Image 1 (cartoon, protein in one colour):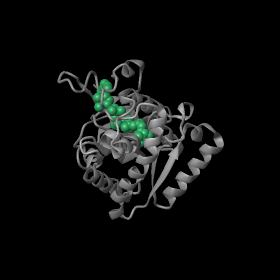
Image 2 (cartoon, rainbow, N blue to C red):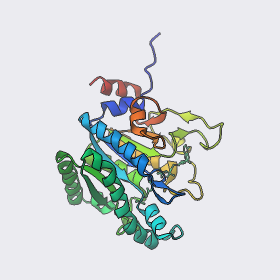
Image 3 (cartoon, rainbow, N blue to C red):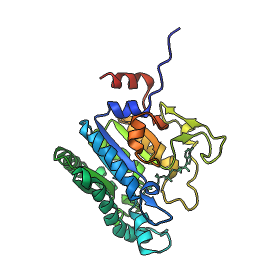
Length: 281
Ligand SMILES: Nc1ncnc2c1ncn2[C@@H]1O[C@H](COP(=O)(O)OP(=O)(O)O)[C@@H](O)[C@H]1O
Ligand SMILES: N[C@@H](CCC(=O)OP(=O)(O)O)C(=O)O
């Protein structure tokens, strides 16, 4: 009887990738109680990213947090209308970049801010410009930190959330791995807060059945889009040959722990054969 190939895991996918997009959600970057950046946690993540870059891999970060940091900074109620979100994002975005800059300073890595709207990936000319700038930044050894340009993105120009923006950036950069770090360690077949929900380690392809597992975001969560948008992003990335990892960024050194196989995650859009072939390249 032939042995069934092992399901691909996060360590394998990261190990085989040449270019990885790492998305950090608001719920990770921002401490809701203290209403500020989780600086010690971010410093540990930056150490992991710096170490990964040292192995010759290219890393691009997509970071949320502008809206959450903006409203926390002002000490106001969470904005619900687009115009209020746009205004607080303008305040929060400088705090987002400041946090990343401080985290990478000890590693002598220059961070570069790129703010994109749907227009930038919708038009050929602007997409080529964004692609060329990203390539140049990577060549210069800088670390691109991308967010949606919330302050100018009206409904028609919005990606909606950074999960889908990450998938578009993966396409722009020709990335082979998309790591979506969130507050949950992957996809569950039910409400992850319930003890009977089962963790799903490998999803070869995002089908309608898989999409139906995504539940509505919880009331009061700082994130946008919830699991549904992560699955859409994984599907988009998969269509372009880029595998996705859904993982929790909660632990200190979350990235290093994933690379060491110490954390569970959900790997999407990579078949067993595909993972074997990539790993042996
Ligand atoms: N089937 C599911 N499996 C895992 N998490 C789910 C599922 N359905 C909904 N979720 C929710 O998705 C949330 C993550 O999305 P979100 O809050 O937008 O995070 P982020 O800010 O990191 O983008 C989790 O906290 C979890 O409650
Ligand atoms: N561009 C927005 C992020 C929107 C978003 O996707 O948030 P999240 O679900 O926390 O990744 C911001 O910076 O606040």
